[in-house]
Amino acid sequence: MPAMVEYIKADSFFHRLNPITKILWTFTVLIMSFLFNDPLAVFIILLSNLLIASISGILRQILPVIKALFIFSFLLIIFQIFFVDEGKTLFYAIPYFNIGRVTDTGLDMSLVMSFRMVATVSTIPILMMTTQMTDMVVVLVEKLKIPFKYAFMFITALRFIPTFMEEMEQILQAQMSRGYNSDTRNPFKKLVIIIPLAIPLLVSSVKKTEKMAISMEARGFASGPRSYYRKIDMRKTDYAVIAALVAVIPAAALMPLL
Amino acid sequence: MIRIDNLSYQYKNGNKVLKNLNITIKSGEFAAVIGQNGAGKTTLLKHLNGLLKPSQGNITICGLDAAKTKTSVLAKKIGFLFQNPDHQIFCPTVYEEIAFGLKNLGVQHSGIENLVYGAAEKVGIEQYLKTNPFSLSKGQRQRVALASVLAMGTEVLVLDEPTTGQDYSEGIEIMELVKELNVQGKTVIMVTHDMELVAKYAKRVIVLHNGTIIEDGPAEEVLGREESLALSNLQPPQVYLLAKRFHKQGFFKGTYTVEDMFDEIISYLEGEEDASNG
Image 1: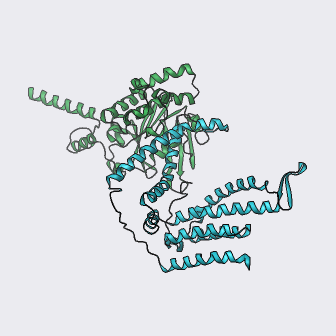
Image 2 (image 1 turned 135 degrees about the vertical axis):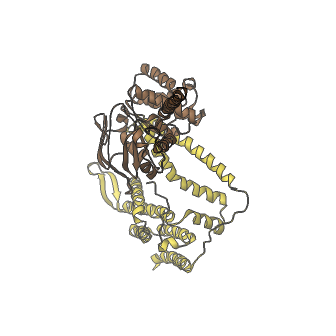
Image 3 (image 1 turned 120 degrees about the vertical axis):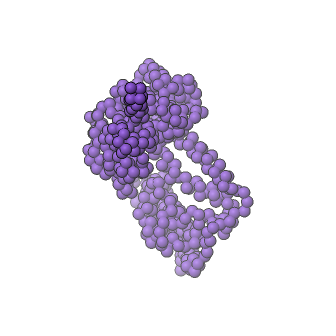
């Protein structure tokens, strides 16, 4: 999954929005999914994410991420579901001994939790895939007043993920060519077996970082106030979308009262 | 020894890198694969030890089907030297680094020491065996990587740009060593950009262009084909170009290595001398 957080160039409605609007959207999704305690409602929020992904033309790239998140959320369910005592008993995981009681409340709660996790976390890759990193930095620094060093650290870390994955592949191939075999089921052996991969990766990352620091300094990094080539303005659609996002939260909060 | 039938390879993103390649390499050959960046040279090499599996076609390595054999098994037959030594070095001493492959192949402890010393001596790093490989220069690290491949004693050596990071004389030293191994019977397949090295050492040259083979034959023939080489942004070695210009004027038979040309000139000059004396 090397493309997990990479920008995917396209000209969709969502791509064109101001990064601030999109950041507000991720917060709205976050708040909304905590406002509701009904699995169906949270699932609908999750579906709305997928809808946005498909409008932006990144559905194909986002699905593997969602799949991975669901595997993780399934583990969450397993850890959660047997520890809820309230509610009616639905079934037992091991029926004969009555071990592993699953109640309707427990099922609801763990489903909400898992959908909530997938819904909130999946906004981040959607945001990354539809927003150019340079644009993101400009708004983070200029509009949200985050110190440039931190914004730079953030995007550099993200930018290096695919690079490191590629590097890892090269290292794995080099070691395999020397008869190295990474197939083992023994978890202790797995720790030892990672060394021929981890050390070259570590060494080359440190070297890469050093080189990058030198070349950045050579080009005047941190030498004074920065200017930005890009201008990112809020447009009418941005204000409309923000208005809708702001309206949807109180609406959702008031709904149970009706 | 190596048989490639109708090999095609396509990356997951649909990018077709190799198209219907057919190559047979016999035991004891010294073949150079040349071509532009992105022509598919490294991709082709990675098929030889099973790092990549063909999308289509068959590869047989010493009787093993490369598509179905694990790289760690093929490592016994094919020694593969990568471009960047830093992708493999991880041990605290050069000795352990060279021994890593041997341990993977299950060589008995008593045998390892001799093989490590032997390989280190061949590449001329025996004085560094107790040194930390990270403190060596890039050229020396490349030699450590080469020694770690040589120690495994494979019949075939696959070298991806073996002279990267070496200065001219170091590069020649490495190539002389490879040549000697080839004379002793090892099959050598190498990728390089250095046309002078190709002319000097390779006996067979394969030119890849956009994933297809546009030339495959004896080095002295292929290196003379300016048009094919130009397609790949390559130029024949200067001796070739010089000899060709002379050939147009009616001198020389079209011989191409420095030694050949030297001999020709000498015999010509000697002829002149005899003529003037007589």
